[in-house]
Length: 166
Ligand code: SF4
Image (cartoon, rainbow, N blue to C red):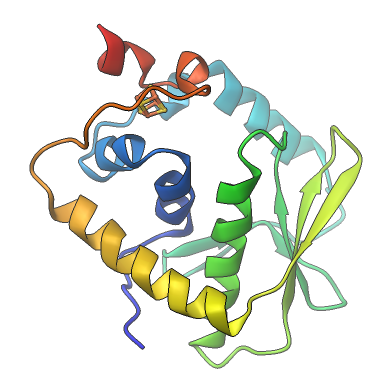
């Protein structure tokens, strides 16, 4: 099993959101801080679950929202719009921890604004899929040309919209 220490959970998330977005991000073209949606996300993050221990950073690779007393790793999100990406980000955290000898942890995505939760487990098939995803992320990181533009429903709300569509 090869783990790429420089592949972060956010990169895995972006891989599933949009590979072009991932390319921008890994090439230091970072517009996310200006996005209104990102600001809303930060507010959700800052004002929920304040009793829990938050933001555990490991190896500068993964940034966990918090782990509760039942050994459940929580990722807080504001909406279910890109749930697949959130699920894979959390699976990557579980995968990364498992490969560092941390077992017996499960995952849960919390949507405080929706009052919903989604449980996430890491299967053997997921581990194989993640290894393929990590290889593909590495290739995108190394590519000198941005991936082909494929318009998506999320493009209008994306911080990189003008860069893609001007
Ligand atoms: S605007 Fe659309 S294609 Fe461009 S980076 Fe954002 S999501 Fe990807």
